[in-house]
Length: 459
Image 1: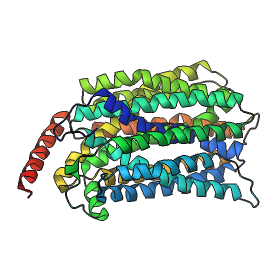
Image 2: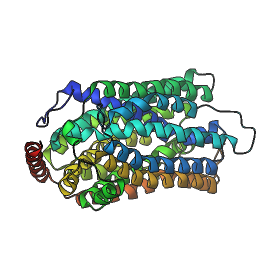
Image 3: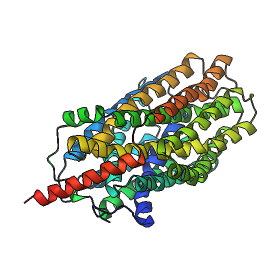
């Protein structure tokens, strides 16, 4: 499945097959961990909310640090398998094993023992996950050099992401209803999710090929590459758009179960239905996002969808207690913004690679993705830790039949006002993105001519 240097259009089976790599990021890391891991730590494993938030902070800091390191390592790798595939093949199976262990509840013989266990297992899981996901994402710009085709590739990826997230939500609901306990439901689900997440990386590593011309130049050091990337204005704006949108998503994911159970009065086992509704709606809105991105510049399509999404979150502030119907309506309509956040920031970021190559003369997808992930995850980890401490300081009591007014106020604010502010900021940042469709095509053409001259000059 090697793409020709001049190929711009890929067959849909190739894009779909490549998109299967989103199963792990979508289900294991993008759905189950954000929506349930904090809840699992506090209400299943019995860890204090503040300590659980701190565990997630430390784990996320490690997650942020290893991304640029693995990205730089893959950029500098030269092998007969390419720069990315060796890491996907090596990390897939360990990732599945450590993910399953992440949802086991061990016996704790000393205070804080369980917290230490989850921190240690998360350390190894995230290292294995980064070894496969970082190189996987770095392959996206290599599959096509055309800006609209990249949007199509990302759309296929996100379609797989959203649909598998939807399936996971429904499956989790069934697991909660049929398992003997919540502990058993999480553990058995994790074993299945870990195995299904690893398989696509093994297949992609075995059957896909990389562009050999992107491996020829002698790579820069990590410091030089990171400095060049951080000096790029398009990179900084694309990263800010991605970070703000996904920070809003992560905040809502971490606190949404608390909002549903303690404010809307939805039973604990039914929270998966709301998650399924959001993901089903996002799937339905994917063609709308694709249509808007073709009819206008990507940044304006993103701004329109995200501004609407921000207003929906603000509306949650005024939903009365134990009123279920408005929450379902907001969850369905929010699918437009969720779909746009999945597709458009990634598509905008992929186009920045040509700007960086024009300035440095090198392809640096790995460092680009690693630095992006580092900055994004650092901010997100602080936010998730903050959620844990907000819950504790406002007096949240796990599994209490009734929470205090202060705890309910904190949960409502985290679900409405905080994401509203973040999404408004993301909307404004998107309008400042300087790359248009026409500018990118000129850059791609210039780079193509440069590569041809370099190929003719090489012995």
